Length: 226
Ligand code: ADP
Image 1 (cartoon, rainbow, N blue to C red):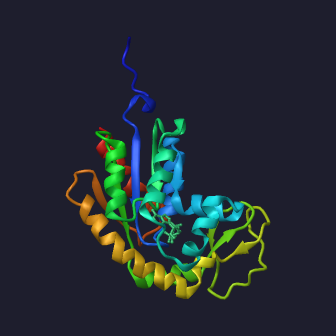
Image 2: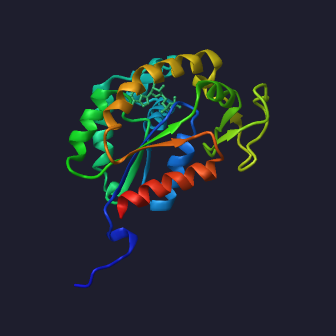
């Protein structure tokens, strides 16, 4: 058998993105998913989807999400474990929103065993985040996250891509954002320290154009895949 050099024959691209809410981690996750044809697994999106659909899971987590607090480790770990055995993860995955605690990080280590996992921290200061969240909206039809001109943008403007309604996410309300940032720094620091000693860990400056962030993120992944 001849050895193929196609990207598919290389090791899976298992990526964990870490970053504060509003760091652009979701945007980067979508790009990585397209580039490597791997699923973007956003635990926040899975949970919000469950709330919208009114499933058992949705009813269980609705209050926690609305407050911007963390859902329990066991529930989250079971959810991710079930997702990572789906066949579409065979070429890898981009995890966005998980792990958020050291317990979740350890559970993920156990799930992956010896498989390589690349961890990328998208670094953005709090003041920049507060600015960004004020102008963040999500289309209720195509679900695309977008930035509007100012924080007081009316909820009646249509989505420029599909004509749907641009809405502020309930957890992007300023008080909830402050709570989410506080929760993030409390929980993310030990998770970052869990990964920092690893050769597969990288910090990327998130305060630059999304295209530039994407180039740096991809360069890190390519270096590790050599
Ligand atoms: P953010 O935009 O704040 O990064 P996400 O979209 O990742 O938020 O998640 C939204 C909400 O879903 C969180 O505030 C939290 O309530 C819940 N959540 C998502 N992932 C996790 C997780 N790994 N552990 C606990 N709670 C989670």
